[in-house]
Length: 86
Image: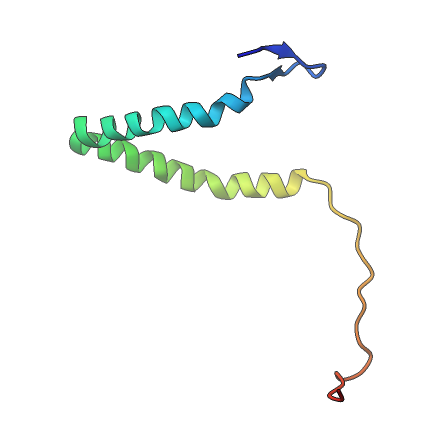
């Protein structure tokens, strides 16, 4: 893995590793929580899903408010009823 520093100071090469690592560790974590920890593991997993679901609303509101709005387009509306002639 390369760690070339970009001009913004971020690390290039580390971000694309996230999905493969999640696919590698995800089944291990889920199996450990569900099978090895039994009921407490299921409660931990439920709490993780509950926390992720609760964080979704604030994350969407933040994303919507932090993006610039697009300029309004002129809408074209017909002046009369739609034509039925073919």
